[in-house]
Image (cartoon, rainbow, N blue to C red):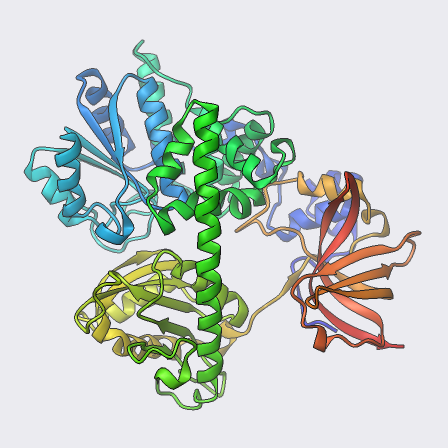
Length: 612
């Protein structure tokens, strides 16, 4: 049997919170799902925009709005400085669309990540001055750590407004206004807003101020398609506030009330907007927008979200599709190399010392390559992290590769690549992207390294689950050792993956109706986990598809028809051909084939219970 942790253990309606018992009359399973996610009252499932937290609670928003209002009236030149991911792209597009409608003189600049790095750097400010000569700079999805960039802008008399959501334990830069729910001294009840959510709040408050004053304004809620896309693509925690924002953005897209760029991207992906789900923002739209920032320049992605011309939207969406295909190819090669390195070095990971591989231990046979696997141990708990670097890796894809390593090994993973592929000497900069597991706050862990060894890390920033950092190539192995020291302090339990379940389904739940109803019952995602179930099934038949996918036909008590299940990328050598009963961890899915729909279980884990 699988070792699973139940989210909610009650099997009786009268044990549910009283406020959820009316839901149980319609579906006990659904009521149990809500209870397992901490819902105790119906208003926590509210989707009305009136349920959003008030903008006035955001520290700095009043001053930011006052300055923006004045800048619009005085025809000041406003420059939006964005970030090079989907959150940054949607934030920039949102600012451009709303401010333009309000009558602002506005343009945008997104730094080339390969030339200028992250945030409002002095170099970005100088580029902005050279190309646009702004009176005001507004950052979106960045800037909370950009002290030098703010100083450079102010030296030229430029007003700076920072809108960001990234974590910081330092004093905020002395910009004229800073809006960030995670800045010190901000009491905004939700810390889960992503960059586009912060921008939405600022613009909504600005629109209200101008409406009350009888000035040109706009209904900012018409742009919630962008807010929903950025929120899910940036893996924002889906608290009540974010679920409301995503719910309305998703509804707008399903009704065709969205920017042409999103419709064109869905066309490229072969997806029907009317059938869109929240997960599609992260798996379908987000990667295509992100491909611009990873492989080229995010301007393509932003222009796709800004255009009002359908043919232009289609052309830009096609360009993004091609960039995404290139990204997948590069990612595939890097993942294969990373897996080979981890496997080759795993046999050497038998001490508390960091292990550095040489050309005999890696897939590329390049003598200039350095790679290391962090192998700090505690009570024989095994490796505590994976940290890799190669001179020929592409910095635009390191975050994805780190995420794949984290998922496959359930360890905090950091992947580095050269900041400039033409400079790989010991004093050159390398950039790392980190992805973490529950219980390891990756940004704070990196900060601990920086505090202990002040000369080791040049720059860093991020969240609990994802972070970025820059250091000198010569400091790589020292960083590996220092990070190991931090990981060695953590309890063993943190590194033991917990697999959660919402328990068994009722026989009546194995239906297309319930699968569709479940998909639309809430906005599921990070922080409001998608439903996942487990139970024991009888195996009627099986097939191995394409040597890597396991297809099962199953029987379940009181269900009068076979239930189909699929387990993708299954190790077919691990399958017991004599299996008579299996314990499955699965999600409900709707399979579409030749215009017909059928219920399908997406298997996430399995164990053979009984052999024939």
